[in-house]
Length: 224
Image 1 (cartoon, rainbow, N blue to C red):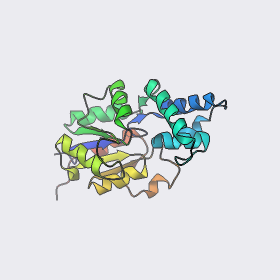
Image 2 (cartoon, rainbow, N blue to C red):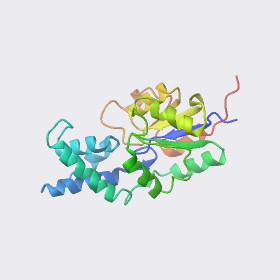
Image 3 (cartoon, rainbow, N blue to C red):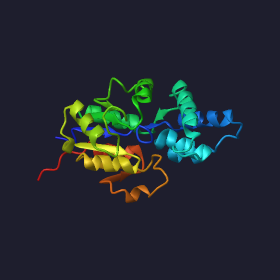
């Protein structure tokens, strides 16, 4: 018997490296306003925060700014039109997913990205038929850090949340996983934002490369 019946992954910055496409969309909006492109190194850390993070980094605009809605809508339209041009699974992640499947462990995706973008992106990178659940930010009434999306993923997958792990690259991922009663794994190789360092998020485990997930997620159950 394995330690976990299912493993759920955040999407942006954990399962897939989506930052190149997100940054490209942001810089198309920047170009529309006659500005020079923003350095990718400034955009990548905030990629997990979607339009709020990228428009904030590119324009210094918060969601409360009157200019924000128009900038956001332009960004989202550009992103939707080219959603998987540069996006790939992180190095080592294909092997992790294959190992989970070989071990009979279900896996799924729980993201705050809304279904408008999650559905075509997951399909474009070939994961739709393999995932036991794909939960978007608007699938349930609450988004992470609320546990509802993770609990929904467990229900759809037919597993006990207490026998699940959640892997994410943002503090809210760890908060959501803990609230759902899951074992939490901090993906320190991801985008990780600009707040407290991932070592301080309180996850049960921390990995610095997807390859480190192999032994952790396919480990046998402990016999007490």
